[in-house]
Image (cartoon, rainbow, N blue to C red; front, side, top):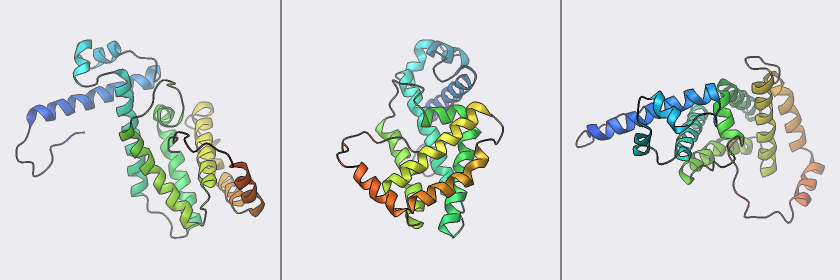
Length: 222
């Protein structure tokens, strides 16, 4: 929720109301997304949910894509805050296990948020640079944890992200509220660590990455 900044020379009540209304709109958008799907509601539906005229929404968000972008930023900010608050074990391998469990818990806690952050359910939606900066910040934690464990190949991070988001997606889609896939996290990590420490796999990775385009867009954090 938006709150006035302590020490501001003057409290701008109009700005506070504007930001509070934006928060209300986003809360309603999350609610509609959880009942109808991310692509299943219109701006008219959203305006009705917050008792507002359709045209008035544009005072707060210029487009539906801007609403999705603000939702994406909220989700990524929540992941950053979760990671910043983790008190991980001093052993780097155990820390990776704890971080992986925390990430899976974050994903399955809110399936719609998981879809927005980590799946292409909105093919026309591209997060803004500001929102992507939060994704990069979240990714920096994972890269630091990997580096502490001696895993410095970017492919190790890519594989880690793919496996954990895959487990989360299977859990959300096929066993919501259960643990059929999330309880596999330790077995998955054992396999990932074993692969990462295999010198033969390292050489294969280097050969396999030759000729890769350097201009490929950065992906969303996982």
